[in-house]
Length: 179
Image 1: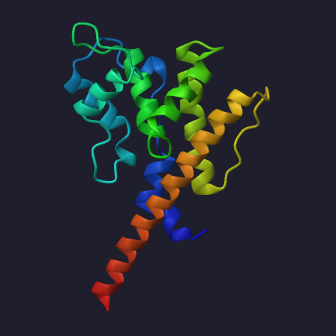
Image 2: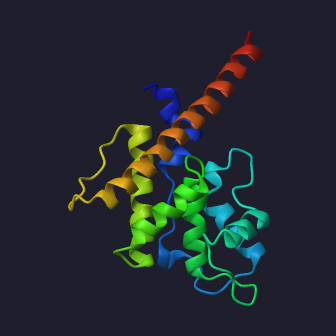
């Protein structure tokens, strides 16, 4: 892999990405504009100049029953966890596939631990995609865990390709200016 790319701000931003764990998400209920700010800030590394989440998207996810309706127009930590997962996985999967994956993951584990595992696996997958660093072995081989890992690896590989293309575009543009 090209050292220049790994040293670039494009790669560093991703390798330093921290997916906020369940307990790190705001503990107070938030209004829509606050939700959008939290998600945008957390996932800014993947925005590619576009909005990661809009109020229309949130309303559609509620209508499609992917996210439960807000209570008194406020969204809880649980809503934020669901929205984080959807915003990450929608880059490579359809909404119905994401909904099915969430359902499968939640069959045997509570939301908090399922979400934290998703965050951990996402960070590992991104490091693996950008550095070739091996992912930790899965202790208990279960199809549900393999599904989660495959999903986040798909996301990580797409992010790598997009960031590399951004890097090359900037690099090629700089060469044109010099030449």
